Image 1 (cartoon, rainbow, N blue to C red):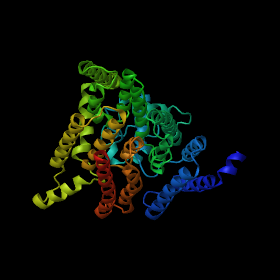
Image 2 (tube, rainbow, N blue to C red; image 1 turned 30 degrees about the horizontal axis):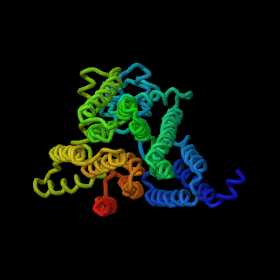
Image 3 (spheres, rainbow, N blue to C red; image 1 turned 90 degrees about the horizontal axis):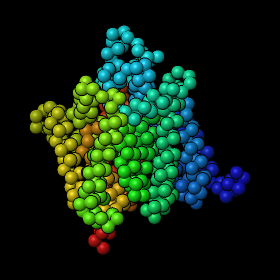
Image 4 (cartoon, rainbow, N blue to C red; image 1 turned 135 degrees about the vertical axis):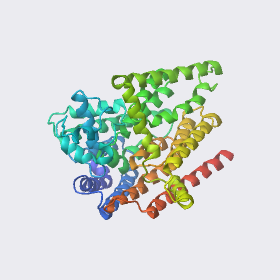
Length: 455
């Protein structure tokens, strides 16, 4: 420790200052404290950059900093999101023998029924939007909720600690497989810290308890297995990722180029196509198997309706959609989300198909780059882009030459300014500022990569 201090005094100093800011964020900040939020967030980004830059890539030291920053949040109740109340509710419902996909919290509380411990407190905390809908969290995510509620204590805080420990463990798994994947790709392994030490990742995942981190762990593990030639196990692990968050589903078609390419084991196209179908079959069968304990026709109806709400009912921090909505208002005088929310996903489908059949996803760097660009364009076209959604972009960018997700992870804090007023309404000028910066960097980097390919 003395030797570390002797040779790394400045990084330790930045670590101590960062720790103070993380503690301030975790235990004192509220999401409507706009000035404090921006001050802490921007300062943490500056300090994270300095820590990575000044440490000289002492891997163990950076790992230690990463873990300690996360542990600072261990006993904190999330202050930027209320989703965790629903996580705890669903986990406790399963432990009491209820299927969380078949009952809304409203169906119990409005009838003065309290099926779980602290039902009223959890109900009040999750808000009316969550309590009035069926659960949309996939089965492996539900398992995490159950696991968190098994922690001794039976209080909301004990369940929060359980959720947080699961997410921290997942981040460590991402660190492990992310480093190994970078090494296999002959890329600098220090790149993984642009994800692991990113304040956005620490705050949104460990702090606010969003399970994108668990999904990302399985996803990166799957890509590592794929590169290692263990494609059948990669399919199983990819299904686990889908069973935490559905987002990897839209990337499945991109594996077409990987499996049908002649560069894989010098195989012919027919053999590659057979492997591709087998890969998809394993992913599908494993996913269905994980859903099986909850399955019924009522579940299918409830789940499809709840997931569909994200395309036709909800709107937050959007870009292209807000422009289309404004045009709709100008023409019809109404919010045309019901129509626009059906058109934009179709455009996303065509984009995915374009990247599937017209991009050479024959090696992992190209495949990951296509995944990054597809997801980015999907988010640009989405009606709802909560901050934690872009965590997947950040981890994918680590394996590419694109840096715009890192820029987005900084400026997306502007979306939280919606909570600075009593009715939680968004300032569209602020949203315009966010996307002007992100899209400018995105377009600039895409054009730069095009020029490099030509030269």
